[in-house]
Image (cartoon, rainbow, N blue to C red):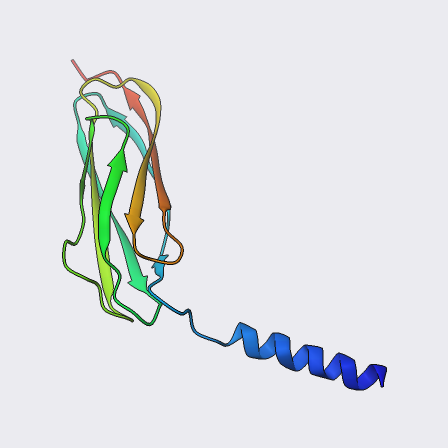
Length: 128
């Protein structure tokens, strides 16, 4: 009896692990990026790639940033299931110095919303 119960539990766990996500779901290849060392005044850009792993279109409604030094471009059209997209983040270091860490909060209709993207760098004095 115990063996039958254990087998049923294993089957249930296996079935749940293979099911697809119900609704839209954003899966990012990476959520953290390090620009390394940059010089004050440099403008750097990075693209965060994602896939809609769900079974319904993802609509990104907003990408929230904490400072004006960070600009974000994101798809305005729905991202269909299994389709890919990119969120482009641009950081202007003109008023930054030393260690920097910024976040971009991606808000959407995805079941795992919001998703937080993070980037960091160390801003050095400009070359003379």
